[in-house]
Image (cartoon, rainbow over the protein chains, first blue to last red):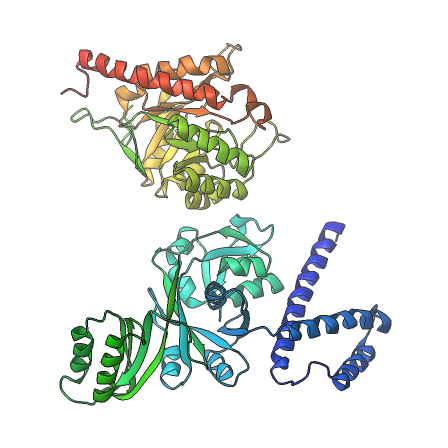
Length: 351
Length: 281
């Protein structure tokens, strides 16, 4: 081992420390949701006792105490700032986070491992917003999310249509010619199939795109790369070997932003859910209402509740403050069951 | 030239190969490929690309992998250079020609560039030729500095035989006893290629002469000889060039060359009318 190699290892440890510190600060923001006061001297005392006890090796108690004094100071500072939190599914760097940052860059994106966690924890008030993908131009409907939407009483307060651009990422200094294996979410691998085969790269499924980037940066498997977002490259200090490696350029994912509160700003798009009676022409009569009111539908999707019984998702252009829309929705409510206006909101398109 | 099954001209129809790259038709239009010898930095490459585009060049050249005479000379930026070329294309719209030196790089260079150049020193690198024969990007095959026409066409044959029909030949000067110029630009090869092969042939007067002062007359001569284009080294600031600075043309001089080429072009059209040559049948 020489100085260069040792320094590389030090850089690696520093990146890990930074990510862990960030993770700690995120937990601090979450903890705030359960505290009425920022100051908690009992908890602080416990913390200092514990780190003093656990300081080992080259870390002496005085040194670690100094560091933690600063950490605690900054934690309180962050809690005072009262950040609004938006939950997304996946590790940091996931496309959900990219969409969240596009929707509102002032919100703090918080990672969740499951879609159901996003729904549950927005409902419980741990997070102010959640952002979830509902459909992708190549992959189709995200079934799990749509199922959760049916059973949730969260409101849709925004939408983002995001162009998905995949990058091939590798550890800094990797010789591109030595890459053999590429880790990513199966859907991302499928979207880059021709790129992979052109360059004789072997795809390996991983639970998440950004998770693959994180694994690459932490474990550094030999001759490997990951497919993930440009944001992941920055967060995990990976080198972008190639940008825009998706086989088709019309790769868009539509995300909905959810909240416990209704959207108070003027919207231009509405989403509703309803079921119809099992009778001839019931769905037609719903569509007829919109046709007669000259309302433009942008999406219609069905999800089975049980065989033969469906929930329908319907999106259309218009505001729920508009007389024409109000009337149409009243009519639809009468002829359907389980009717729900999920929300009226503004949609953003990000190319 | 019996063994040249795929590169020979078919005397029945005299069909010429035309290679389309974006909106450039090589083998039909007179194509001017210009740019720095090597990609040195983003600023240098993009500045030069903008200058040659303004002057009317059709494609951008620039080396990311540089096979140099001395192992201690600048070897090129590699992958970083390819990324810069891709960016230069985004900024100017000029398709990119760049050299590939290693069979393992072929698929990767295809991800960034529009035409793969095989350099004079690699003309007979058969494993590289075979690899380039397997991809769907055109190849620009430079003539080996000691090679005969037959040897050169045999190398093109290797690429065609693997399934890639799009090969552009490029004369870049051969070794003779003359030392005043770096190489001796063999313009007689241009009409000779046209007699025996359907492949387009262009001329590189920068490497062919290695002297800035003779690049312009030799470019005009290349057009007069019937070449399908030229490839010229241009650097936005030749004094700073890391590679081949004596033959790098400043943008102003290149713009003058372009003007003269267009004058000669209409003149050549008239001359070709008199000949009643292959275009009039």
